[in-house]
Image (cartoon, rainbow, N blue to C red):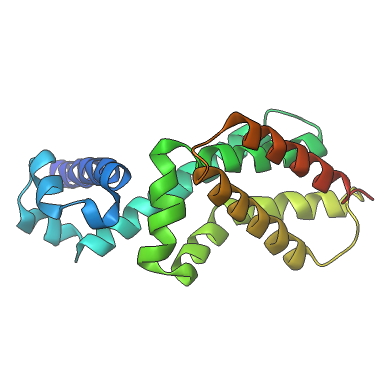
Length: 194
């Protein structure tokens, strides 16, 4: 019994990785389920045993991407003990992770288009936005930030980061645009100081 569970988990993991590669390289519309199945060395029936549709498989891939990006945010932010540096590094980490080739198309382009903004935002809220809200809350408690609505500030910053990532993703990732963005981010965050 234990072996079957382990094999099932391994099969699902492999399928998600193969699907992620196809969704990244060809987009949702161009990724053929038959090709994913073939590369994962599975049958179509095996895929449908675990996922009801290509769209559900994509949703799981997007959730995986969102989780990875949040882990990156946390990793970048935890490199410093300074709360302001943590906030800046976390925001920068989000942008950098979101525009990476492995994440960009699935997370920024196809994710909202295929699953809708509400589903996409729900995932963002559970991952990167949750971390941002936690950091802002800690900073407000310590008196580092102006006392404004935590929810409003979180949504405002998160929305700006998402839009910034979209802009950079569509500009073929030019270093000048990235440098400008990080400069604006630093100026913006400076304006929040108490």
